[in-house]
Length: 493
Image (tube, rainbow, N blue to C red; front, side, top):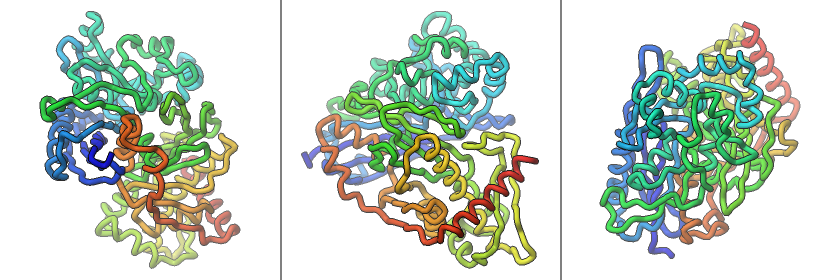
């Protein structure tokens, strides 16, 4: 099957990538385009869905030309996407009634507070696995329905369609013939019942939505429709894999068994653990979601998200402690290893597992000898401590030991950070050579479903760099206790 190719579209917060994989699963080429970040004076964040769709079409053309492949041999398409970003459009015209509201946007906070005050928070979490928050799609869609006249009109006429970015792209790529999403994306909307595996009528009603506004929910390796990218291909090909980006990375990392976990290091960080075929509601500040539906089986995950991972390094760059992110690792290695300075990056509150929006950042435990290098070291280490908080919560919730953590994302190339992460967790850290885990996961799911890849062989032998813990147990315990004290000081403020 080596003469066939799989195309992946990785639609992320900052831009859109198109990737081409060969018949053995090797990445041949990547092309990408950014899109505008539309930010209001209130800090609300939006994207133009039509711009994103145009970029999808353009990046597909770019990557085919860059790779030099025969486009006639493209046999399947996979899509990974930014997850909670939500939008609505009129099915009679196919035109969005409003911009997509990005996952970072908190404009639905008032709606969430209303529901909390009415006593619905526990009901929502029990059904959806998610703590009520404007972070998820439900409150964003409710805001559109309340505030956008075109949405109200379309809803009144029975023409309003609501979804996440994957369902919009599937709809557009299939010429409006397919309105579908997958289990992973549906589970991040705060509208999907995790155990009944369907849109929750009662929860939807709380947010002012009807289930017939929402897409059909399918397995992640289902046939979502066919596309020729508006005539670019001579014959349409199947869209055979759709996953939220973090889920795609989990699948691409090969975390296919309970107890396997990965951390994606980006601006923030998503830590995700496969917990198998039974949903476990967290008692330690984590979210429960669906990993994917593959080969007719549903698997669940525990997930924790932190707001400041790579963003911490950007911050120390912005105040002049480093001249580029690459310098952070070098300077951190020069610091006094016995310095006990901690940086708690609660610049906009703390995410999982604390969920304290009122917390504010601080530098804790400085001595007279603390200097630039020690603060840079504390900035690097705080990323690893936050990941450790989530991993420890996962172990408590699941009762499963995590024997290694698989890492990906830009900061995973930082040797100091990766070694410290392994040290503070006390387990090996495994980093694949490829950086395109989200798109790769969607591509592999599509290729396996289309019969192009054999699951066992395509994941076998993935080269990885391994970091093993070098820190003594008592030193690890001492340092982590110091971190916990620093966090408590922030939570008191």
